[in-house]
Length: 284
Image (cartoon, rainbow, N blue to C red; front, side):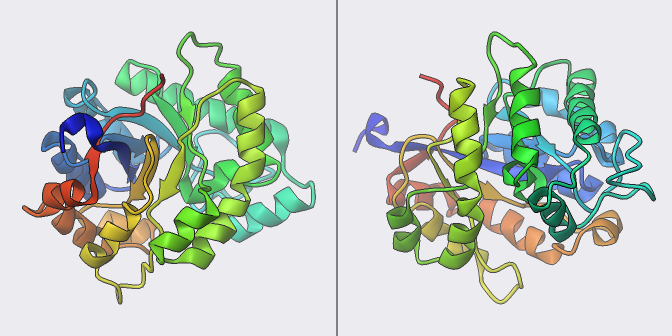
């Protein structure tokens, strides 16, 4: 099989900026050709500290904004959504979206601010924009999100992550199918809005598994590669656990396990066996 016959997939490490340890792990994988995209939480302090280090890999991977509207502190003042200086839980944000209670102007300003912070600290526009905990798909948020991205008026606009896939592909993977279907259901509304605005999205989506620590990531990863098509996006959360991470997020030591596997000797062999190759997003 020649390289041209391998299916190109985007492997994206989420949450750069969540902590210095997460940043370090992601930079290790980027430097050794184990990922092809990095999503940045630009509102958080650790992003500002390490953002310039991304320039070393900007020529070989996609760099994007991982829009953060839950659990962390915002960049802007948000008296409606984050009155105490902390963004709401995912459940609370979803409820506000479903009931029409979202502070639209606040979310638009915060989205713009996080994109602008990326540009300010990296010196470039993002290749893509998505959302932490898939918030870009939520009712109400999806409209603000798409209109803000379209409003950038760039000759080469960022592509947008949608978190749905073909039902047959999800079932073939036999990995967290219910979660994939449930989260994917919110993706169809986003996908319609994206297409109406002439923006680009990934063609497939994978990476769901049980984060409790009872499932070995190395055994789960091959399932993500099943039924891949060009521009399938596989999301992951590698990193080194540190005190900053523990203070901010519940997903900790599982990130170490993901990093260990992806940095290991068998990673590229697994891709080859599955008939896929690591690639940046293809716009043609």
